[in-house]
Image (cartoon, rainbow, N blue to C red):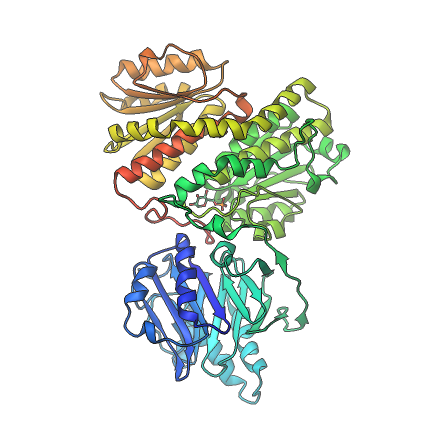
Length: 615
Ligand code: G6P
């Protein structure tokens, strides 16, 4: 959460910073600000509200500086206000700092600084950072070199507990910028005489494809044509760039009204990319990145945990079904924020799989570190090359879904579901514990899915029409059995996130044990029916709500007597292992159209952020 951009080069920094912030706004959007190095010192322009408000600030058009830092905020400490907006400055206004993350010991540091005469204007944790830098800078007055600046930033950062990605500029060093990260994302894009800094790759993808990926507590001293890297003791280190294949236009809307709709429609392509060469046309399955996990190791595993948050956790639920059925290994799916505090039983016979689109979710990273420390092998499934979880895990496999910008995740989910199914097939083949005909048909189904997703997307106008009949509802229920229950959960989450309609998802058979008390005349109940073995029982459950006056929408691939339902969305048939990839699509579209019908900001729903880098 919070987005950081920086620029150091030959062009005016301000427009580049605002453009970068606009692209990063999905990370947080309650206030924004920039600071540049001008001839007469540091500029500072900030206010509460969206990034576009920056353009209205007096004097912003006069900024000439070619070095600057910028921030879009998702408030943690202190309400959204001008004072609490970033950048923050020290008392002498020598240093400007933007920060993403949380400084856990800021109270202690604030008292320390106050006892040394510093004063504070905001309620943020961040404001201690520029003052701490100033404190150390002043203590080192002998050194006149650039190292004095670097040492002050290093000393300040070593005092900080918590997570941070920081950019610092100073009026005393008009040609430089220092950046550092710990448990919060930050990348540096590099061209010959320009450096672009960002929390996320897509925001600066139109300028460069060459990126430096930073490890925790690596300090970077930037000038226009050089990036020098230092470890936490300030020993200089070498770093290579990583070339990112993502296409810049994939981070643009390309004619779609919203990123979410574009990303829903990108699913056939995203899934093709995820499959890649992992399943060949002659149905060979290979996950190169995991090829050291041999039969001896896989046979020794007695438990798999899949750990993730939000939508990624729902992909994990689909993964549990596939791994247990194909590999015959018990799987538990955990919400990352709960996992570490419930003392999970982990040893070297445990395999832990962490799923995260961004690869930066703080709870997921913390859970991964715990699993590793207790001897488990760890696999990261992520969409972002070089992201924190991929660098922390023993093995990483990428979804290759392309940048996902809308806060509500769509194509990342379906790509995760595909990838975890491929992983289940891959392990099952090594273990030799599953009927080979089943594996063969599943592989064929996976190869056929992109076409079937294209087919499914044709329900868009039907869904849009239906959304008009329910967009004013206050409560909506989602039901499903087996694999369909996982889709009910994800459909319900999508709806909550972007339409602000309260919704509940339930296992169809569980409804009668309590929640059915809430079913009354006219309430909408959405059911997913894709597993032929469970259809009859699920229909009985739908009958129970119809009897109590519910309006029903059914998403199904089955040929049923549709007359008992109010609306039926027919999707292509596939096998239950991967049916969530098709059945979620009408529900993604439903959430989208309801949100539009209500006139809401689909891509930036209230209170949410795309990448949750605080625990
Ligand atoms: C946030 C986002 C969700 C996402 C979750 C996990 O809550 O709003 O869309 O599913 O984080 O994100 P990750 O990047 O770890 O998949």
